[in-house]
Amino acid sequence: MVTAEFKKQVIAKLVEAESISGLSSKRYAVKIGINPSQWSRLKAGEIDGVLADSRFITLARLNNLHTGDQQEWKTVETSTYKYIRSLLQTCKEECISIMLADLADIGKTYAAKLYARETKNAVYIDCSQVKSKQLFVRELAKQFGSNHTSKYSEVYNDLVFYLNSLHNAIIIVDEAGDLRYDAFLELKALWNATEGNIGWFMLGADGLKATINRSIANKKVGYTEIFRRYGSKFRQITPQGREALDDFKREQVAQVIEANAPAGSDVQKLVKASGFSLTNAYNMIRVMNNRSRA
Image (cartoon, rainbow, N blue to C red):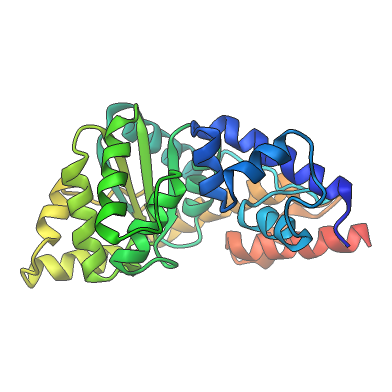
């Protein structure tokens, strides 16, 4: 059962997120997928009969909200976290474009998502969920609270107009290697239409680098231009060499485990058991924390 307390917690978290987003109340309502009048009623303290109970659960899930006695994950400023934050801030402040292609499971996505949640006029897009041109542009428009349900040309033009009106905004394009060809070309078009007014940060792993290099080698239209617009190079944080890479991963995993594992845990034992994988470390700690609360 969804309690009144749960609803209040969800609303409080969303109000806090709205204040950070830089969006108007109407645009923020569009972003989270509810009617602006409903959002106004919720913020005014009217919680019964405004939304279905199931909708509150969906809002909490889609917006990554921790409520009640759930243990929040403690963010650790690992080397990856600090490097990506610095690149994102540079992109945003200088309205430039940067591309980072590095190994999976080093905390890239976590750092990018958190930056977007904590930063005004910053939007994060997971391209693995919106691979086509239409899905990508409509989702981007929604995240900025813009018209995203009308005819495609109107959605695109409204989005471009709004983006060019913003000050120091950034769009984070994660899992970019999953985009279909038509979406890559539209990404180039959006860059052209907002040049100098928006910061862009493209993020991916080996697949992104391989796709771009292969497409440039095969002279596929658009890829050379995209690569140039993002600085003509792939940034990375991980060091070269197996030993140096293992040390890098081990240090990050140890930091995360030490900050989030239950008190009294054998950190080094957990680090070894994780195989220096942040994903494995997260799953182990989640299970341990659930057991400690049981």
